[in-house]
Image (tube, rainbow, N blue to C red; front, side, top):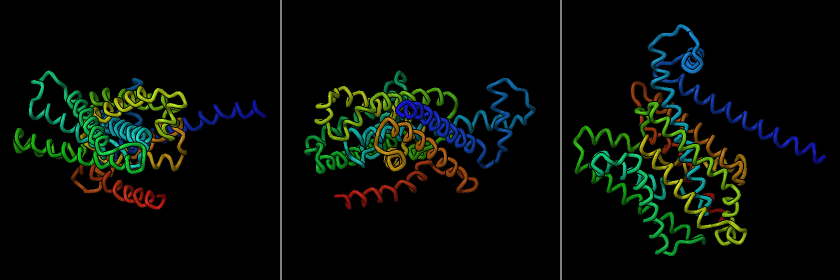
Length: 350
């Protein structure tokens, strides 16, 4: 009996991995086919065969250009951003033991936006600093400021203490949003200001292959770290002191995972702008489906986040004919009601 069960476990894992890969591929295919100009699935598959495997299907060059140069990199970047932001939210919620923690609510996204705008608009670094590096510095600065403020206000592992962290995050988010607006108003012309404000609401229109080569490895590193530290994150569910008593190097895990969370958030914000509610809502949906063990929760969160942001991008391109909405508008329309449900559920539990 034990041998039979031990054989079923790898087969079950392979089955789940196959289903996850199929779901992600179907989402990418849908995101590539659907748009202002619908493109048949067969044309997309033939284009991929030509580009990747060197096939020689005869295709319209315009369709090939739309698929390969515009939609496919956009969909891949959307998947990476969704996965990265969702996993970042899950890690923060586990480390801080707060169901409301996510990069957007804790001010990390706002800090990354400020750093990116300071580099691109105000010219900070005189061209020697990349936008991604500026966003990373802004994200780390914002999180450190929020952590110091929360600690000074009595933040900790108690219910009240974790509430202080969220309040400090809201204050930090407002501060960095104000700094971003100040930099734009002072340094950008009217056309730049309009473009940046649209970008800050989440914009995938400019995603191209160079962005794919940046987003893919960062998202994979974030997910890999989450899986590597899955047992440590399970231990943090009982609190930092309990994790330490179980042999978890608490400080090392906190520094590594929060640093990676800031890195992932900063890179994604530098590519697509600040997108809210993904890191807040998706981890809760994943817990509902697969439970709280991080060995399963991390991959499930990444998959749902990727599919969710691809679906949000499709809606942003098609919901208003002739216009592209900022993707942050779509995620907010979905995330705000879900945020309210989380608040009500938390109140009932308390």
